[in-house]
Length: 461
Ligand SMILES: Cc1cc2nc3c(=O)[nH]c(=O)nc-3n(C[C@H](O)[C@H](O)[C@H](O)COP(=O)(O)O)c2cc1C
Ligand code: SF4
Image 1: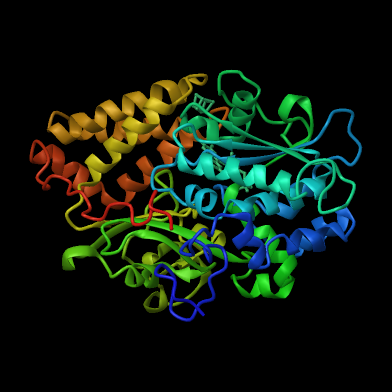
Image 2 (image 1 turned 45 degrees about the horizontal axis):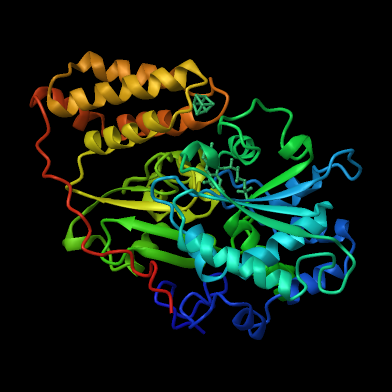
């Protein structure tokens, strides 16, 4: 059982098991700990059987949308004129999300093993690891692990002795949030400007260089070896209904002990805050962003979304009691997204928080769609006007209306990624927005920086 500093007592940590072990990122440590046994077991099966096994496990994609991995793999046509590809999405740029960089720098062989199993299942002979441009240590560790994998017969002309050609290359982006979106990522991988493509066709049919391509998140693929070493029942037991396996959550904001936590899927939001020492400085909880900056807020009030399900009002849980998995967070009116959970205390100004998010989304819009290119910028300008006390109540309605014209109107969901928080902040904290007009500006204190540096960045044992 665990002595892991960022997991519940008594919970068996598997995804981040080697993060605190000396040289946990090397082939030697990985293999000593049972590494590449999952790949061995998967190679003994037919590719279709590998896909069926992953389907049974309810492994939901950890990159944001929560799409079941096994089902996605089954969309790849068996026969294709062009080569098939497996692309590992390590772009990780959503504010609040910082887990994949640890997987890559602390346990790169687990991702390589998961990617090799996925590639074999879909019939791909080439893996591309696409990493965010700024990643230094994750890239160095991954490149060293790929070299070790070639050296040890995991990659190359055969895989663990099975005659299946499998190559891998590490590609570094140039630091654009939009290149995390899978089709923009493919454009960037092909050497073009990273702009999303219209879908359909989906990448599983027409992806990298025109060939069928599966894009999966780093953490999604890290889960795959566990399915084959521990089995389907174990994997299901580590999660909640339709959300199999353990989950890594990036917890930041106003908690005493921010960090990258590993918990079972469905671990309650309030318990995670407790595990992190509670809201800092003894303050009250104001709101939680559950899944990265683009996801709507959960607040410590009765969960209205569950009212429709017929329970008496006294039994409605608080939104912040929600189990953290894709379906439960959706039932509470938000999204689990990339599990970048940000806790906001009572001193947080919601107008300023939203305006800062707006700066980010306006800057990262690729500019192809008018509602996104113009809407993110206009709304951000209006939010700062409100924060400075120069706006009217009508401006609040304009912000709301502009965001409703962004939702579902664009090539990719980046416009929604800002429109959704705008609507959620306005719905849950409208009075605070109006008060900024009445008081002619903001009365909240300046934001305070967390005294915690990154608890385990760069100083890997
Ligand atoms: C604007 C935007 C940014 C995204 N950034 C990432 C990212 O950094 N990493 C990631 O894995 N998925 C990201 N996604 C989701 C990907 O498009 C894709 O759904 C995901 O990589 C699929 O992997 P999964 O099924 O394993 O989750 C992003 C999506 C959007 C719309
Ligand atoms: S929604 Fe925004 S980021 Fe996405 S394609 Fe359109 S302009 Fe580009």
